[in-house]
Image (cartoon, helix red, strand yellow):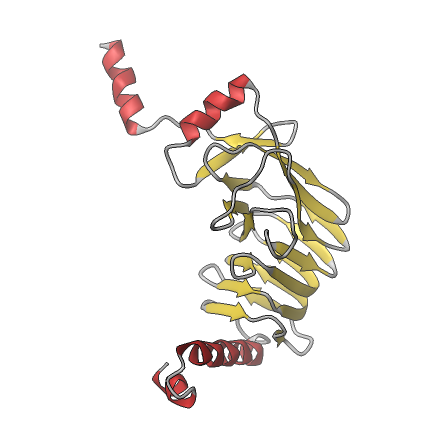
Length: 232
């Protein structure tokens, strides 16, 4: 970091850009022989190329940014988050998300890549693991808004675990070439569920048979103590 700052003549922003570029270059050089277990932030216009080799994001790896991952198969076993609050990340090849992988998506306004995150996959998307949805900083998820947060040539599988903003009800619509999530208007029952979910910054969600995500109804310790007390 000190060397990058010296090269940037004390300009912190430029120094950070130098560090990111070197991180992407280093990751590309070793991608054919090991997984990424560090932090990679791809700036817009930056391509992480594996020269035809498969690339894996390890369980403790984190990849974000607005650049492109050029690899025949990119496997995510860690965390991937398009953009820099928010933005678009492109996978030029197939995307495979393992059981331990998490795709982090921010939703806000309706402009793709500007108001909410987009993950673009040029090949097939094989999905598993978690989908974690957060509100874009400074924005709200309006009722009735729809977000095509992921596009692909084809898709197999699906996310198995979900985290959503508190008090939010979302409708999932995984399609043949895009994955959409919509903000729905909750019924009276769901409003009560959402009220319970308001306690935490982010809550795990239950996926109902109609593909609606609602906050998982897990009693907190205080409620458990009250319940035990009522039984005495």
